[in-house]
Image (tube, rainbow, N blue to C red; front, side, top):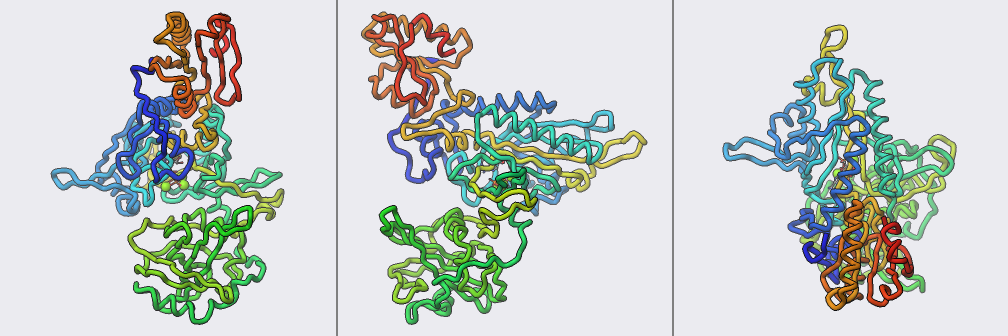
Length: 576
Ligand code: ATP
Ligand code: MG
Ligand code: MG
Ligand code: MG
């Protein structure tokens, strides 16, 4: 590829809504372009990365014996009514009507369609086991699309589905996929963990998530140092003993400053209907910098349900001061309170509490909040309604670092992760609902034992960038790079020698099957290098008149601090 023919659209600045490195860098590198909330064009540079992801996933799926097909993006609602998910799926399912007022959905996943294929095509036990997969567009009307491709509304997923005669077979198919997933994520050079997970809306009994380790991940994962135990936080919490955790008594046990705001004040000030005897609690937490100065104050309004079930506290409002008003993210809530489980002591219990983000409350300007500290209150707190929704449910951890793991073999560590893949044993959930059977050896119809296996194809590059970037840009692992090598001639328009040498090397690399791009745009060296460092091409060869005089090119890996001189005659072997 020649850069002059390609579309390179690097940007100096990331858009304001880009919060995490991968989103910022993909936008700045011109890999994606936003069309709407959670809806992106994969620009030529980004598409090349996505194609690399697809190719490796396809290769490993094929190797594991799965067979590719493509199912429709738009599917008739009837199938989804059969499974019950047309109603049950909730607002993430995009439901549309055609000109005849018939209901359709845009696939968020495809269990129904594949079960329908299974019941028509897999008639006999002799055709089992079977694993069918697609790499196809999905749509989920996410409550909060964000982080670019990480949580899009339209995205690409690899989804595979297995059909087996019995549960043992289904478990074998599942294990085979688990193995294929490890092979895939190893090839991408990702640091990840496979963790036990709840099966959620998809249903089934056995399930594992593949989580790419990253501080910006939306999930928390719990694993044991010293044993095999690893689970996502949801699963770990479900298993954790509900026993009260003895937390340190904190200053928060004081009532709010009299005359400023009490629980009753808060309840009164909220002009939305609330459950009967709602109690509330306002907390302020401060973030300090290394010098101990307050850089941010967050105000948390917790509404406690009238039934005094202290296990559930609703965070109706979360406001930030000093940085202007904003909602905090679920991650922040977890970080703040999760770090100090005793923090919620003032509501009368040290029991672990679950924080659920609740409805919005009325607009209130310049409110004064008690901060549960004598003579300490906050002024100018604004509660607003036309603000972005806070994050969904965030659990306060009752699983804490250093605790004994459930297998009793090690101590727990907690890390943040990005869910990049998810595998399930579904059992007969769909085959039963949709009456999908095959004829077994005894001539009797039997329900399929199924499994389903997803990989976030378009989420994967974003996750990879979270692990591989620096202040200059992306650092692609070779397996994901849009181009493996960039040839940068300096002064190509002035020097016939440089032009000839660059084109020769470019031609040789291309002929050798290397994904090479020749930067023939005539950019100045500084701008040219900055572009490729931002885009993250792992190998760069610079050809200049000065170097050519000594018969040398300059080679630099994206991770190298400086370039190395390479004899022009050896350059091909060097980068190939
Ligand atoms: P999440 O917990 O992040 O919402 P999920 O559990 O809803 O994901 P699955 O139904 O397990 O997702 O789908 C399989 C895979 O598809 C996920 O592991 C993830 O990699 C990817 N995926 C899910 N939702 C999105 C999205 N909105 N944007 C990009 N990829 C996604
Ligand atoms: Mg989801
Ligand atoms: Mg999930
Ligand atoms: Mg999942």
